[in-house]
Length: 571
Image: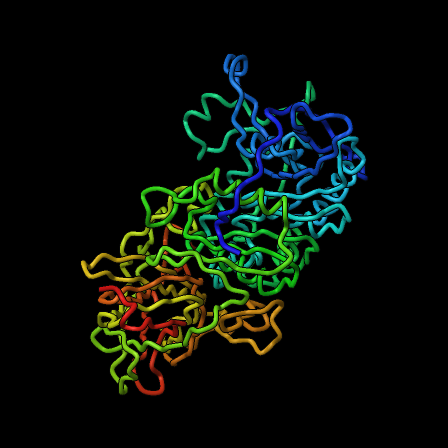
């Protein structure tokens, strides 16, 4: 099976759609706001499947007068799928938008029962053929995935794009490091929506046109006073900490604890927060038929990283999704894009076969080589808390789908290889092992991997991080299959550094697939902070850190790679 598909698409059956806005009562009487779209011209005897788009970000917007008199907001997914004979339900989840009730926290257990009740409602409609699926990006992708966990017999498939599998490690605390930007900005965004106000990040044009959430008929918009996720910054350090405001632990709302029973089409990106990580973990831990896709995109796949134009635009993506809904796969396959080679590949397992694990040791005088150096004086840095990867890194752009753009990494230490002698493919999780000595018992360690081309231009590949107190490599059984050293991030496994003593810190970077051309170099950079995105640790003072080099305490990065034969290498 190729991706993207080259098979012809069936012709559309309908033109335009009808709209009905209504409240659908749940089992406890709470009513959810729903916009139902059916293909225009649908005959009474024709039965069709339904697709859910369930969100906490307003299912639809209401325009201000006079714009509402002559304008309607575009909805490309609605127009596309109804043309091919699908019903679309745009849904405000409980306690959000125009829906009633309380939204206690993201992806609550009540959301599961609501999705079940909505599915049951659909199956009772005269136009329904008894099949229900879901689709969406980001938050809406998780509700689509949860649809398969609500165990209703009618749920058949879901298109899940750019979401998380493990909320703690994939978004809130990557490597145990508090993602301060996302937790604060996302909370502020949702506070505005819950007050029926436009968030500050919305465009000037939206602020001119949009009044608020679309109501249901003449019904008033319910008032929402929901708790927000920035409480995690105040109450959580470890995976098993209970947030008293949200009344949850992170694992309570993670999809790895909610097995699905429908066919999945799930997408992520090497450059979008940890969504590639989520795709790989979902693929490796869910035995059901599925198609997994990892591209080189921003959040939502509007940008192809490294290209001026997106060679796989939105319409082509929707066509690919339609093929999935029409004919869900009966097998399991992961499709991934290798950057610089610019090719899609497929594998039944991850990492793909044929790769070899190779260690690159940090050398004196900032070198990087597969040769183990003899014991050497340590490299030292004073933590610079002004260090930053900017405002368009993989973590910040997840919030609003801005383009991903990295400047060359200015690490406090950097190690660069000699030019590669042959084209070399890297696919998988790089793993770094640092032998460190710090003046403090805690701190953050950020590691970045870049490719340096023959002109000296730096190309960001991936990064990883670990908070020092989480450094213990656990011998417990992980909750799901891992591909890097397993850190439990639980309170019982906390292991602060002992100031002045050497400690081993090993952790995985986010996965990547890239073809590093002959003549290019690899560069590994280290830092103790990323001030515009992650919380400062420790809050006071500036740790002085030594990185050990050579001998039994040689620091290194381990990379899965495949060296191309010289006859196949670039000239």
